[in-house]
Image 1 (cartoon, rainbow, N blue to C red):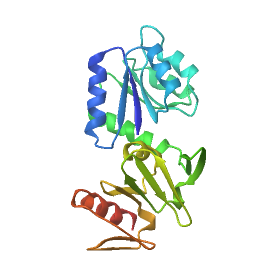
Image 2 (tube, rainbow, N blue to C red; image 1 turned 30 degrees about the horizontal axis):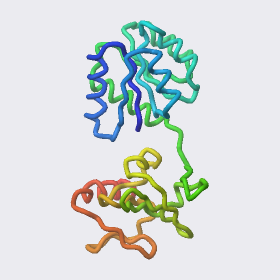
Image 3 (spheres, rainbow, N blue to C red; image 1 turned 60 degrees about the vertical axis):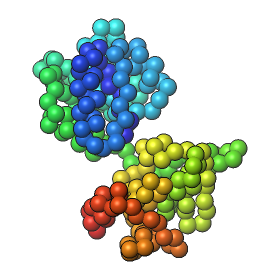
Length: 222
């Protein structure tokens, strides 16, 4: 997930960035130390959620909420204990955190973000001179080859310039890395042997690095 941290206090930013990395969920955090900087970043990039300070010196968090899209998930950060009631007036706010921020309370907010996330069913890939729509549920697996990724589906393959790091945020929780060069759709796994993972007519390698996380997810899905 991609997260934007907005706070004018560098210590708070560092703390929240540390909390994000501590979760070990692959959260990619970007920091903005002013309201106007955050607006520029929001206009340039897509973020899965925003950790937004209510009391910014240049433009308030409340004003930022009036600018950003209503389907943006926001965790508001504030020192105002009375803000909880007011937060219900904003569709973007999933939760709010009171300073000083505690890690366990932060974890609960992230769980709310995960539950509120809208399911994705497709994305577009650059294919030659055009764009090809890829239905996520149709994907069998993804193979990395240098600077390219090959997206394998039952009736077609699409190769595009992209890295594993770029594609992971586009995928749902049904996908799992099995090797430094492979990501599989766990719902398409037919058999797991010492030779690898069987999906249709392909055998996907399962490396020691990803074996534990793969087997754990496999057990959770069954």
